Image (tube, rainbow, N blue to C red; front, top):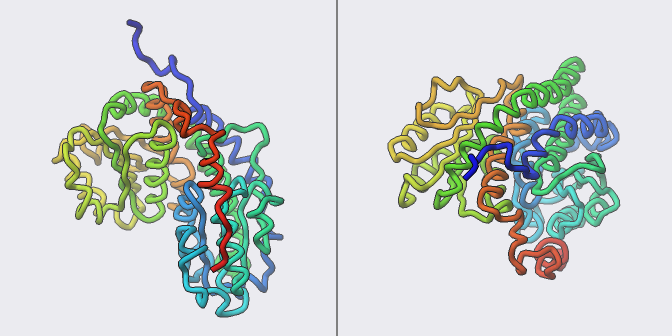
Length: 385
């Protein structure tokens, strides 16, 4: 039998990792500084920001929450879409002019719950903005304002990896612009922060092949695991959550995700630890980095195979761990932009090694033609409660 090598495999998520910088640069140039997204009055009126979406778009909301907090200096909530669209007290909308600002994310613009959330927020007096690649979609039309992502038309986006990055870049540009309008950053800082997006993407792209080599080695181990357990905090929790989503979307594996503190209270007790793969996102600037190191010590005691996504030296971590080291970002809020590719590629390789097509198209009930697909995402009833 021929040796199983990385060169024998080709997968969508690896191809997307190789084109990540090009996609980011295209979106960056398209969204510009978001000057037309909101008026100055609307930005100054914003007393609270709610960012929402489903699936990968909810991960994007979690990832950019720290940046919006830093730039706009108002309370920011990354909320699950069903909470905003059905369960949130309507009195929480429209309690002041243009407040809260509800940002709904949907790359396709066809997700029913995001449309519903924006319509409900608008009906009850909130200001609304859609971040989408399709401004003429139901989601785009449901909002008062739109930031058009501008993904390359010929790009490859499923399972969503580069499309996720498109959402992140558009949201980052919007947050930085709002910070400048409120004079929370000087003009030169605005350009420095914007330029740092491309600079970080480029430095990470330069190490992507090395990360891919390590991802393939991890994939050969993790493909036989009973489950994969992800751990991350604050903005890096988005990267952990996103990685967990790729397990399901690529090969339908069992997965879970948590922050470091709750993991120590709960997921620590998962049965058969040597057959549970662990993925820890642990960057040095994370306020909870010390707690993440304590968590990794517990993982080491459990003898779980562990992959660490980090910007810290490999020497700081247990010798048995598989360490994916990314370049140090100028700002911590940049980390979610590129670090997810470490596990995206791992998941893509596991998909290929197991011979299971992405989104489970090996089975009729998961086929795109199945009407359940439309009902579960795009055709659910819009109910403004």
